[in-house]
Length: 217
Ligand SMILES: C[S@@+](CC[C@H](N)C(=O)[O-])C[C@H]1O[C@@H](n2cnc3c(N)ncnc32)[C@H](O)[C@@H]1O
Image (tube, rainbow, N blue to C red; front, side, top):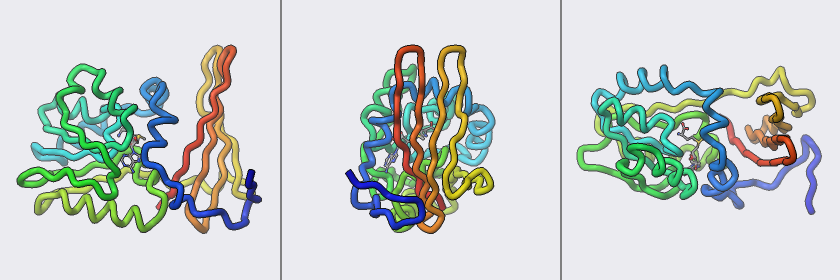
């Protein structure tokens, strides 16, 4: 098994990148985890205004956290996602079976509609799932390809809080419930702009360990 010390060169994960991996690791319990942290209300209000009637293309539609309330507000939404597990979560919800979804990698997939989209959306750091700058630039070009003239591309993303890292490592509290805690062990590679997160959830009688890779921009 290979191991890497902080600060030493790591192999490029671009070669091993699997767009389906996120859903395999995260689909189970995704809605419960994000419910307490991400209130879709204000985002949906803003997106309804920006969409100007739509249609909207959501790259990484997931389980429909934003797409379903947008659709309920009368905005037609199409989705793209690489994960059958995440899309199954969407399909299981009221209205989720009605949204057209293209399965594929949003850096390259073609989901064009006649007339184009008024808004292309990439929410909650999903752009950082792409493994390197080249793939992220391709994704921007692909978003432009789907927009009608004057359309908008909305990208939501954080910047790492560098002050919270010591020697490019940190451990952070995520959630506490009466009989469960979630903590994250995080390593930063500021040169490659990569953040590798291993999330550990300790629950009465079980331990769940899940990895997450971000290439932040
Ligand atoms: C953080 S979740 C966001 C889901 C939803 N947009 C939300 O706001 O809750 C990221 C989603 O993007 C999908 N995804 C990640 N990388 C992808 C890729 N390269 N191509 C297509 N979908 C991808 C994942 O399967 C997952 O459903």
